[in-house]
Structure formats: structure tokens, C-alpha cells
Image (cartoon, rainbow, N blue to C red; front, side, top):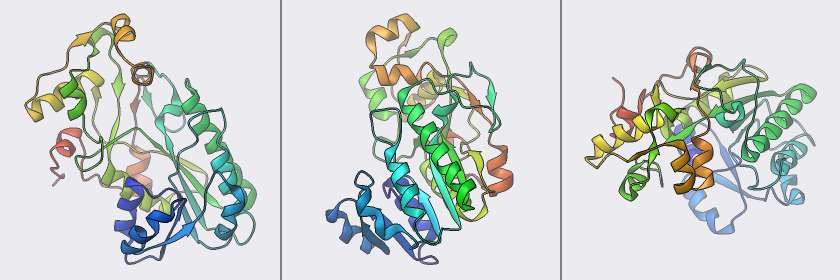
Length: 287
């Protein structure tokens, strides 16, 4: 496992104890906590390629959850990982957790995995760079690589994993005529999708990993407010939002798409525990 944060640890809990787990960490302080979870820590840093030599030939399957740097147009971290994995016997599979942001703004269209990437932000361009690095590794080294395109991750037990804090601040959302479709996945379902992909994903395949919710962003926050018995957020026009909201949040409000998850269900065989955000925000699994 490369990147063993919240989702990585959830995936580890699904895999343990049936699988021997190793996790790359750049923090010596995390060694004890990883061991306590039944994970063998490997000290190394994706920003220091020389520290990754131990990764060569050590794992039969790789789950890559580490994000790119926060600046630039490339992802040297994924490049460094790919180069390390090429040095000796190759893993049978590599799963890379990307973002649905690589599709860019689709103006509310339904989006499946055959749609070409069209990143509109530097953050998404870095992800496209990483995807291409992973795909090249798969084609050139004969590794079964797969890409998971992931939207907004949420879970009540995840730090910042619900809209509650934003609702308490009264942060506005867009008025109906300006609003955008948004997509979601519960962190537990994402972890299960990652595990299934490691064994079941088809070679050089892309998968949308999202639940069945079909809501615009404002309606999502209205739903959350009603569930938490909090005031619904104020609605503003897009021009007003530009004056009130940070650039990062505005970037999410500039992209609208409805992601199709058929391939995830049929090929990976994922049965969503939290098929909608209404179930997930209140932790009510599907029957």
C-alpha cells in the first residue's frame, strides 16, 4: 500500500488477516501504529526516489493511494513509484486511485469511462499525468494496471467527512439555475472497491467509483441539513459566489457531471453498502 491514510487503513481492515500487508510511510512516528494494525511498515518517501529501492520486487500487488504534489503540472511521486517497481520482478497488479476531476466540466452529462479526460484545473492535470504513467507501466511491463476515478469521499467517522462543519458556518451554495451535479462515495465502499480492483480489475481498465446518488450540490447540502436538523445553506448566484467563496471551493462548483458506475458493479462486483448519501450520512447500510 502506497499512501495509508484513512482509505488505506479501511482497505487494510478488509484485507487483514487474509493478506500480508506492507505500507510505505515517510514517517517513523507511524511505524508503531501501522504494526498495531497488522501492517508491515516500509520507510520511504515518494519525494526522495532513492528511498524507494526496497519496493522493487517486494509486493505481488500494489494499491497506490498517494496524492500528487500540490503544485506543478506533473506527478513525480507516481513517476518515482513506477520506476522503483520496474527494477525487479513486477507486481501482478497495480491499482491507482485517481479523481473524477480528470473529466473536467461535462455540463451535467452522464459520464462513463469511455469519455476522454479533459482536466480543467492544475490538480486534475497532475492526476492525468499520473494515470498516463501508470498505464504506460502496465503496457510496457505487462502489469495489470487499473485506474479508479473517485469523486467526493465522505463518512461520518472520517475527518471532515460530512457537510456538518460547512453547514454550521452557513457557507452558501449555488442557486438552482446555476447549480452543478456532484458525485459521492462512502469511504468504506471506496475501500472495498480498492480491494476488489486489486484482484478483479481488467488490464489497463478505468473504473468510476461512485454511489447511486443523483443530486445537485445545493440539494446535497439541503439533504444533509435536514438530516442533521440544521438550517439549510443560503443560495446565491454564481457571480455572488465568486465574491464569497475560496478558489478551491469555486472550482468544484464549476464542474457538473453524473457519473455512471455500471462497470464498477458488473466487473468489480461491488455491492454498495451505502447506495445513497442519505444512507451513508446516517450510517444506514443498504439491506
